Image: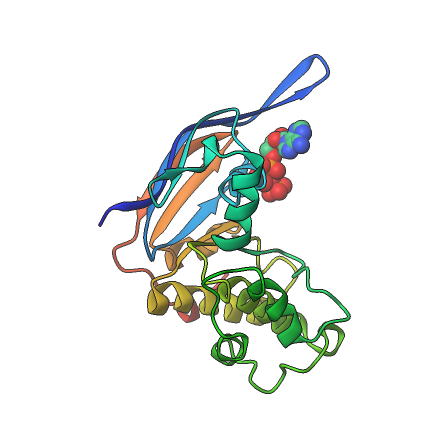
Length: 234
Ligand SMILES: Nc1ncnc2c1ncn2[C@@H]1O[C@H](COP(=O)(O)OP(=O)(O)OP(=O)(O)O)[C@@H](O)[C@H]1O
């Protein structure tokens, strides 16, 4: 299968006065369509930097970022805005839902601007929230709020689903349920999913594990038989 995401010599430098910080140092990796990839590394390794670049929220200093054969590193601001709106679903650690909108309205907010959007009700049913659509975020548990956030990301029918420490704010069991949902989404819908985490224990659930440390890719492993999240303990 062809590569769907291809990161080629991607470098990101930040200038801080006299100092230059290299957050990503010539990263090379690829992800195939429908794969669940985990980008693993300790704090400060450069994970958020590359995820933000893949999400069109930042651009690399040099290198190519091919998504579905298009180099988004060469995009103008206007093209990046369109890319963020239609091609990327983002899931954050702290959900980032709009508090005075219901679960369904939060999803509708995203689908309203996405041309290939899916039906919000159907997607909310799929993530197990059929009974909670008219609830506000404050009436939902952390795990349920994260499901709304995943539904919001999925309903755009994005090319990429990106998740930044999606279980960081959740307890162990709830975190596992959210990871299972992301694994199901990837395998059942052929949705390409990238998760960044510092939790090495979840690596066996991924089709591909990209280990990053000190701004560089250190190791890439492909799991031919990813483990169901239910079988992983940490
Ligand atoms: N806007 C910025 N300006 C300057 N330096 C930055 C900026 N963003 C990130 N960095 C630096 O780049 C390096 C990589 O940061 P990044 O946030 O990508 O790491 P991370 O692996 O996501 O860490 P964490 O798990 O703690 O979020 C760090 O040294 C960080 O201080």
